[in-house]
Image (cartoon, rainbow, N blue to C red; front, side):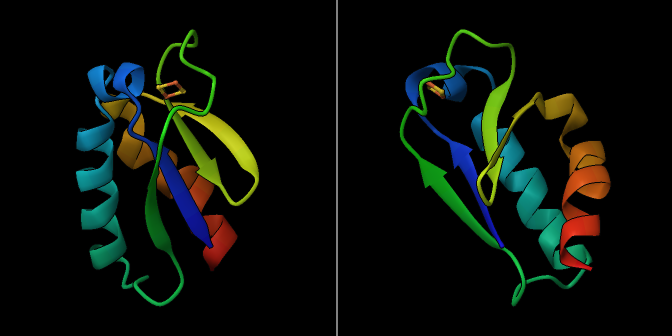
Length: 81
Ligand code: FES
């Protein structure tokens, strides 16, 4: 599954780098390297929303860095296990 994290300027300011590193750590921890691909994307047109735009496949979510680990465990793990 592709996880696409917006790294456009607005999402960058809201912490997309932090989210990417948290996700990278969790992909490692749960041994998901062959199941999950982390990708960056330019602006996805959702800048006005709070949080960073993250897509799981075609589904869009808003994620803030302090909730990134919880998001991963709640939304990503069930989709790949
Ligand atoms: S910068 Fe992320 S949606 Fe616009």
